[in-house]
Length: 248
Ligand code: AMP
Image (cartoon, rainbow, N blue to C red):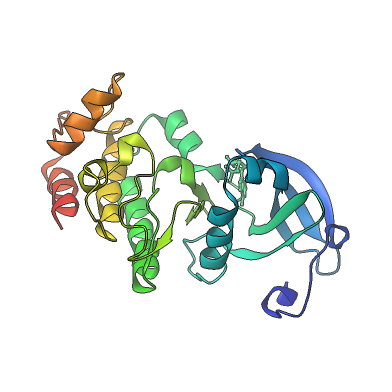
């Protein structure tokens, strides 16, 4: 795929052999694909322009492409390039063979300390890369993390990410992972990703996020009050890590 780094090369659908569907997203499907010349296997995300326009997601997609295509890190899903035709936009993505971390977590219910620590280390490393480039992800959660062929995590879905410090007061992200400053519509910075890191660690070890409640208002209140209840199986070191990252 050396073509991807040469800006003068323009991709088109006939450059790829399309395989099975890997999943369905909000704006279209993701397919396994192989670049014809190099035989390089990728994931091709196909989105309909009409859906993107209808949901006012064009700006968001442009930002996602601009930011993700410039980030190079083993734990950040590569975006090799993009192209479009009359009706669709195509993203050429690194193929994450082992699928969604969310599915693995649901299957296992929770991860043991060692697995959780190993995963969290990889996410920290990836976030360090983002933050050093002034990129805030803003939507770290198991659904947005994929697993590569060798079991390494890959942060994906940069749809909500932003170059700090713009859009500082936009409320976005998933309720369970929202940082208090976002709920309170206060200015925020890259530390919202560290809050998510604490929530993620908790969910890895317990099997559900710390502030989960069927009533969204209760979840909001619990987040703002940092009302975390730890089950006995979460050891002191893990508790102090989770408490620590949210206070950084
Ligand atoms: P998305 O539109 O990004 O939410 O993707 C929809 C689904 O396709 C995800 O839930 C994954 O199961 C799958 N998927 C997306 N991107 C990839 C990828 N790069 N490698 C493997 N599977 C993917």
